[in-house]
Length: 130
Picture 1 (spheres, rainbow, N blue to C red):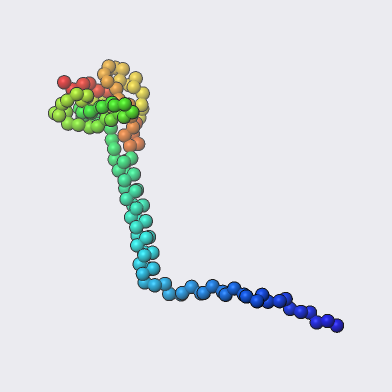
Picture 2: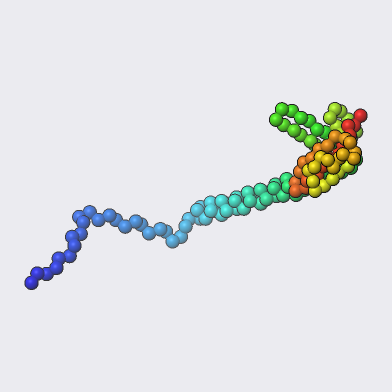
C-alpha cells in the first residue's frame, strides 16, 4: 500500500498582509471629521443658493420699472427705480401670472415681456418711461 502524499508547498510563500491597526491615529480622525463637515457645509450652501435662486424671485408688480437690454445672444431684464430714467426703461402696467402668452397684453397694447421668475410664470404689459 502506498501512503498519500501531501501537496507540495511552494518554496517561497507570500507573506500575509499586516493586520490594520485597531486604533487610528488622531490625525486620521481629525482629517475624516474635517472632510465630513466640509461636505455638509457644501450641501447646505448649495441648497440655500438654489432656494434663493428659485423660490424668492418674484415678477415685478404694477408700477415697478424694468430695464430691458438686448445684445447679440444675451437678453437681460432687471428691476430698476423709475426715477433713474434712461433708455429701455419700462413701467409695468399689468401683470398676468401663470402664463407666458403675450396675447394677455392685447387689451393694454403695450410692450410685452413673458418669462419665469423662480417658479412663477408671468407676462408683463409695460410702457416706455419718458
